[in-house]
Image (cartoon, rainbow, N blue to C red; front, top):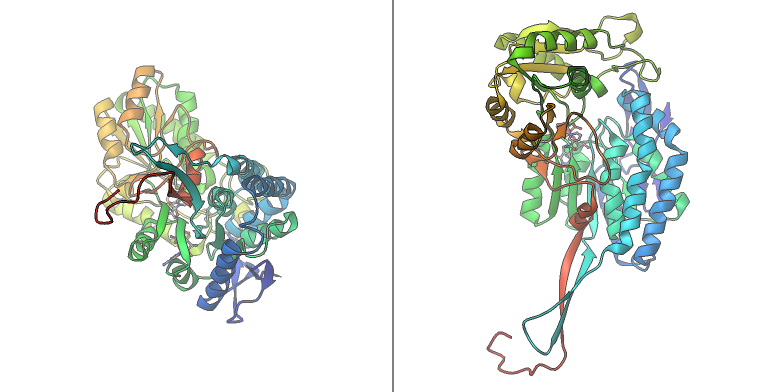
Length: 492
Ligand code: NAD
């Protein structure tokens, strides 16, 4: 078994408590690595190192262009290591190698994009309404940033946060999910190789209520950027509010994937299956509510069922595998419990509904692709995030009803619309309350395009030019160029 170590102040080190816990492979159900169980004193060391690196040493001395260059170098190293890191992710979270490899190959672009942006952060000169003053703005890095990530795409979701944070000039303490810490610990070794000063990036692994909570409440942490479950996000937001910390949250979803009767149905069938069974449904943007117009409902559902039932399950490292295991044992239990809830609520089981009993799935945590029809949008299976391969199909009669059902949920992360009517595409894009709307496609993301949630799906946006602003604060500077300093009791 591989034994990993914490990464603090540019060094690999043991946790103060001297304890490790095991990380299990979802495909074999067996431990494959040992991860350090950090504690509050490790957080103290890491935040102190990050703070020191922020205020002194070579990091604050670097020009923005030099910072950008470091990010470009990191991108090159990451590109060279993509296959190795993808394999670590697969062992840890059980997602398909094909998917993780594609993600890892794409990730260097985040570091290139924000590396290029680093020296384009500039203030402005304000044409004041007052004579005798010169006023300008500076955009300065916030300080130490806590980066907290979940288990479903550890390095991709880390890159979305880390690249703009470093480009802005912040320093960082990362707390990856306790279920998938290995790839983050392997990745940060590259930072030292390309020349990031010690302390700029630190990693403390461990459990959410131990290290996560200590990190969030540390007084030297000025911003928390979090991806994970909405209840955890709420707790973090409450703590951040008490301490006046900046916070951005990428939370869950219950995204509608809406198929109109005028859609290209071949594409829409693929889009519906991609929306929920790709990544075994373990994505925040899963199209877990399939809304189908009444005239095509029965035939469309038959086609989705036919495609889903032929999906190949098995070893996520095999290139032919299409559906892998559930990443964690608690998540496996949660998905099965939601299948029970849907049955009890009266939804009709059209496919799956049980653990996979196939020789190619071994002892892994596999659940058959599951489809429920006759779902009412008020059912829990339509309102609550399952985060697994479970699709709820809901029938609608017209555009008005589609919008009503799509928006009748507390989340608002993604939505798909399948139609050949261009006017309808624009109308739906305007009326759906979600951070992303895909028309005649699903699950596309880019470092250039803002990503985030409406409603309970989160606060703030990642990706795109503006994401760097979340790691900056604005200072207004007033220079007196000749205004008289008159009556001290009157505002100037
Ligand atoms: P989680 O909230 O249980 O854990 C996420 C991270 O928070 C982990 O690192 C965990 O250790 C840490 N954590 C837990 N309690 C904490 C606390 N009190 N203080 C600080 N940190 C704490 O989520 P998860 O189960 O790992 O991930 C699945 C969830 O993530 C789903 O709800 C999914 O929708 C969401 N998600 C959202 C996006 C998005 O971009 N919107 C992307 C992926 C996943």
